[in-house]
Image (tube, rainbow over all chains, first blue to last red):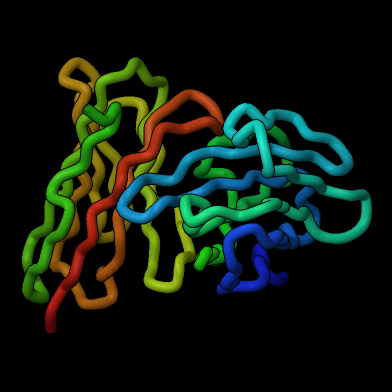
Length: 116
Length: 107
């Protein structure tokens, strides 16, 4: 049973480009959480999704950021018109049930986004 | 001032030493979590505490709710314990995370 998979592991974009980060949850998990870790800072919750639904996006910046978790395929975190401040590690976690705290979540290895 | 403060930020020790990492928080919580982040990113939950003390192998976590303070101890430390240890507090999935303590254990 593969763990949570994220790709790419490293992503380099120039300012103004789009970044697409993918997260495949563990088999049987229908709930996905995205977190951002800025350099020298703790993780911050961004968005919580269930299949085809955004449950809580209170941690997402209002502009340029969007997330989806379609019925088929991975969850996608999309950042449009990236800026240098978007450079961070983006972690995805999944859980079989909803609204779980981190001890019941399984984390992916993260995607490190660098904006030049 | 951050709502979750960890100390020290960096810790280097020799194999076998007793390690203590501290976490202080300023918000009301229902649970505190200790997690381990390995080089390369993978994050693993170690403990969830709401009171008292928990032990798992060589790891011990304690919490003092009145003082809003928790400690993570590692006994007989080993180079494979080298990682970033993160404290996070909250009552649901929207936790407040500390910045982490980077631990290096030298052989």
